[in-house]
Length: 243
Image 1: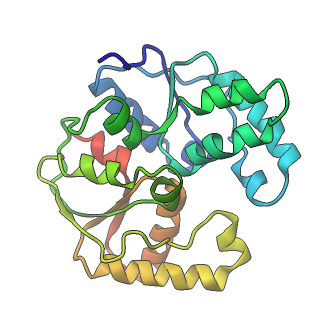
Image 2: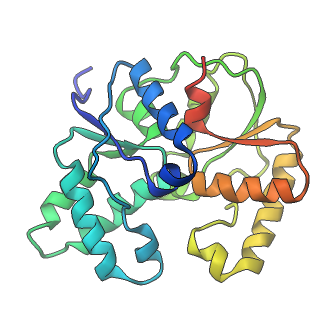
């Protein structure tokens, strides 16, 4: 494959690092299955998205500069988060506009990918050899769907998982209501959106709800737990990392 990168880095992301190390392990396992041994740079930082979302561009820029330095040596950067990847791609060139850092940021952003997007669109891989014998609903996160335009990639991969029955949501494009600081600033609106999403999921009869962003999954899992639902939430990387 002519565009196959030689040196790949895993961008772990803050939420995965703090709450779901299994998602990082699953991502590494999937990449190994397709013949890539990803490195995990020790100097990586938060991408700065929380600062950007809350109106602190100077603090975000300091983090972004460290992020660029950490990942600049790699041919490709892969993250289990459409949200973080969208931050790098959309905002880094703007943060450094007119400075010597602009071209560096733009170059790294151009080779930073969400996991499912990287597998399907960069590597051309749709089947990673996974097995997961469960009835599954898939929620494409807003950033994966709208910012990256890659909402179909996760679904494509799930359709190739052995034993998996994929059931479609009636409104897959609807936001779950998390939105980072949105759920904190507008809890009533967030809760209403979450309620609608959980009703949609419940109507499918799924055993497992899969998504590509841990923020969405934590939000959804919290709602399911409060309602006493036995339905599990898993990251796509955890499903694809199974055998």
